[in-house]
Length: 74
Image (cartoon, rainbow, N blue to C red; front, side, top):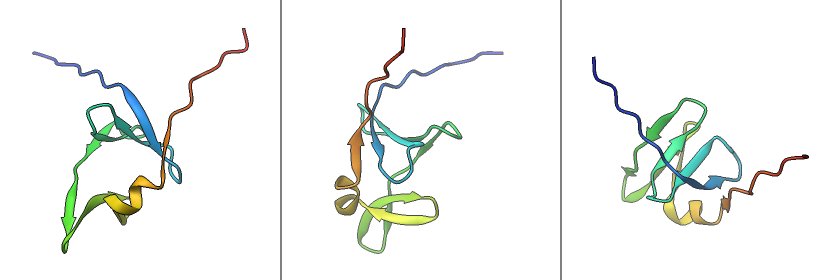
């Protein structure tokens, strides 16, 4: 049996649902289920289905934030 593991560097996240995060190569990953979400076309709009709601790329850009660096108490 062969296995392949892939490593992604996460850079941005969706403000409303933090488990949806984007990589530096612009792939959307649901970190809760570890699945890659595909970019889709709904009508004439391009975007992603997030939590059962379609979010266009224009609306999405204002709702993205950089993932803050982790701080440790020690």
